[in-house]
Image (cartoon, rainbow, N blue to C red; front, side, top):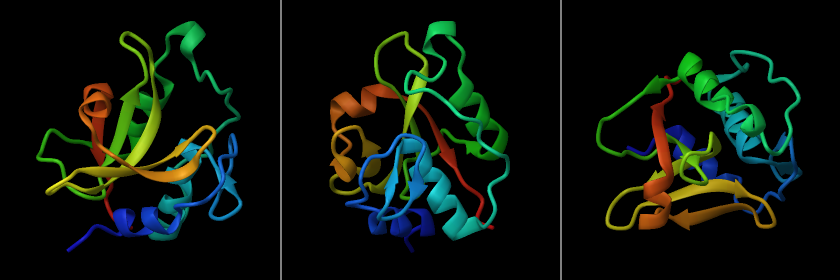
Length: 142
């Protein structure tokens, strides 16, 4: 059975990119995608998200997104499975600041994410993307 987060993620494909947005068909960024799907599947968000800049906490080197994800989801080392939340480092040594939802594993892994300039898309979880994964999380369903 496919995880509700993976099913919901595909419904967001085509939503335009909008920094700090979290509304399907209107606009979202990668965090907004997770927030919007969380609300659809689990209801109210576990905490209010403060305003944030596009560079997150890079200048300070703070792992703000990793810390928040760890507070509200279960970090996993289990086999990859649809519905897992993927947290990426966009460069070696940088803070983790990009999120996606794993939608398929076999035979070709894919994930849905909101990407600047592209909106919400489903992308192959290619080797370059896999190398960028900083952590994977499982969401307990509400």
